Image (cartoon, rainbow, N blue to C red; front, top):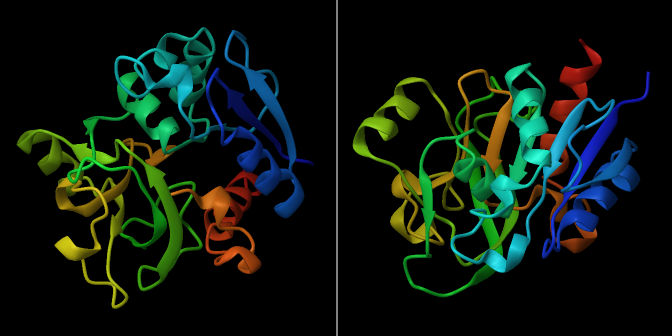
Length: 233
């Protein structure tokens, strides 16, 4: 049975086509765009909330997009255990929608950051990380101005206790250091998940790391992990 993936499209988004290309042409999945005014996701197996600048990042990144009609359907899909991956602005939207805890602030150095980053996986028990060994150091690009993840002390402790910090920025040896942190995120957080592990938000762009000719194909590990999980259902 062919797997069907939906990629949300918001005004101002600019990574929806990147996600579509990666999933359809690199991973071979049936993929379609879902306009932000839709109230029904249709027959899909997973949904991607892509990066970009939804609604021009007015107010706060993701603050307006979280009120788009489609997000009601995304929330129901997530509650039913459906896989939801929010990438960069998609992560910000998940935070604003309350599907993940915490918030995003401007990068610590107050500059837009666009470069290759190194991340390590701390939690393999999500729908997106089953094929990623904890010793792997993934090379995934970042491109954001508001990627500085922050959470209260209590929230951060809960994330740590429940092993919900999925990715951390690290150096070439896998060490989590301040120098490896591109934005100032607390605990070098690059990605977190919900309690069930079916909703993942991450700032690095795996859809831009699916071809070694472009510098890395490590992003395929996330998408192949999802495929493997869905095919076993």
